[in-house]
Length: 148
Image: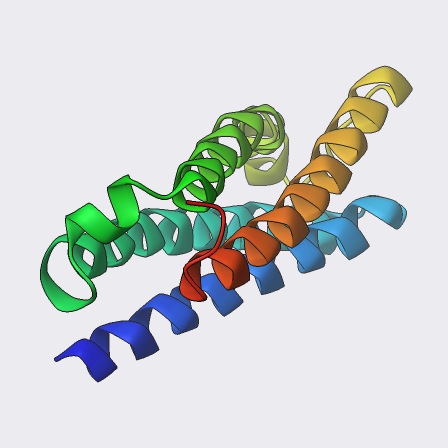
């Protein structure tokens, strides 16, 4: 079971990173009807991957790995989990923007996004990518028993 949950954890993590990378690429392009729809679908995938990653990760902590004492006493684990929560909260900004496009997309129109909102969404996605890199560092430190 430990191997299965490690696989699921990595699958969810890679899906999440891929979704953020796709959002990063799509938001840099000119917004079209197709790219706006892709952003919405990608954001849904991102949300599902994040939720599954959290659930599977917590199951690993409490049932399938080294046990809660190991993780709950690790500063690297706390940093990793805290950054994950920050990324989740930050992702609300692009999600709300993409959800606001539903009416325009149903009408077959390209959504209008102001330069200010586009800049904010772009900054958030860049920040998410940076936080993911730091999360990976924390995971490596944590797995080696460091930063306790």
